[in-house]
Length: 86
Length: 206
Image 1 (tube, each protein chain N blue to C red):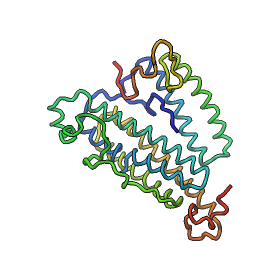
Image 2: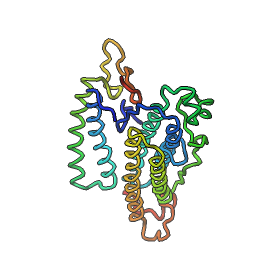
Image 3: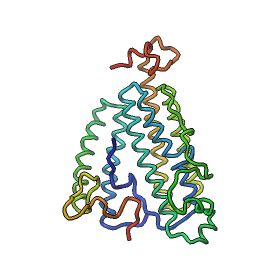
Image 4: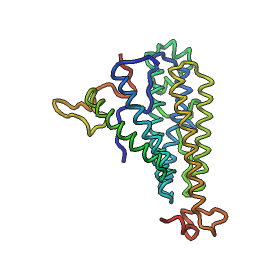
């Protein structure tokens, strides 16, 4: 894969952090009392929250409710996920 | 309800257009074992499910499938950017192009439109979970076939990710089926519908 703008690098960190939550969440659905799984989830969420804050501060909202909504409606700013930059 | 995150589940950056690959990969959007059918199957089946953990599994896998169909659509979009008419004709994309230009529309690789007749929501937890395990295997086979047909590593990497997710989902549905069966009333020896035939279902209610 062609690598990478700074934005793409940070987006990959966020995708990895979010994927950890998706995957351990599915595991916990069928293993709801596993102490290792629960501990992993709490750590993964803390890490994701930190990366998400960093990403949104640098590149704008990941979800509509986190739009800055100051001078203009930044939620719709490009790139949308399927668009290729550069 | 759902909230949109403005990103794909897995990184995707396909620089080289390839209309033939686009047509093959599109089948995982609107084809018989595609991600659209998968997501609608699980999100529909939730309402007849009895076990709270299995409701969670159907919700979360159904939601992840929505992220997967977005990845597939994005791949088709990137593979069909900046195509010349010569490429469209040479790569066998002309029959899709005449109806949709390069717009994204759910159909199988053969052109058959998406249909809910490709999946079931039967109102029986054991029946539905058995279907879901088969569905994950069918999708995994389709991704195996795509990997046999496509060489570009920028296309193969996200396809390999999606293939691996089918394997994880198969595992989770297997655990879900075991959980439902373990919680059947001991009188329900022949596994009658634990959602509808509730006299067999007393142990399933928390």
